[in-house]
Length: 182
Picture 1 (tube, one colour):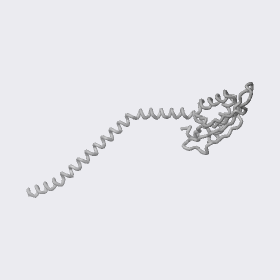
Picture 2 (cartoon, helix red, strand yellow; picture 1 turned 90 degrees about the vertical axis):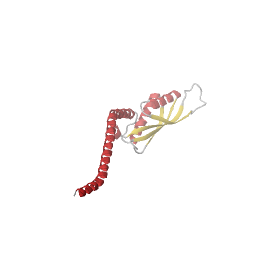
Picture 3 (cartoon, rainbow, N blue to C red; picture 1 turned 180 degrees about the vertical axis):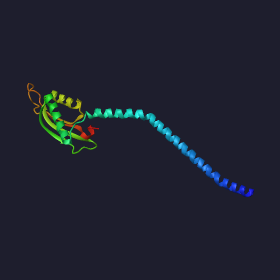
Picture 4 (tube, rainbow, N blue to C red; picture 1 turned 135 degrees about the horizontal axis):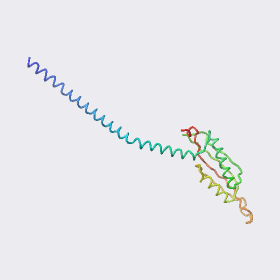
């Protein structure tokens, strides 16, 4: 009987010991993985205030850029706003506006639309430079993409006031009004 118990014990121990070792290894691996996850979560928790500051800084930069973009419920309306701004700047600079053509983008893409206005006008060099400075140096993000200047009377007498004819293409970005509310 004792021999039978000894044989059964050795057989059970032979099968049970490897299973006990596998269970122990799996438990240790799971514990090590849990410790790695805990450390990763603790590191993330330490970075949370930094990430919140970064999000606030990004929001502040977005808001400051937002004021530099044109308003308009559609790109065509934003183009009309740009044309009005250019006409006002031309009037302030003493520029005589001939024609204004709006070239709006057809739709907002990724919340933005490029709008452009082509204008032909007449002025002296002072009015032209003042207009260019007002357009590109103002609060709005505008760019003069093309400028063509001609002198209608190159052989005019010196007593006659200088007159330059010019065409310019001004571009700006319009933002979808749905993004302004974010």
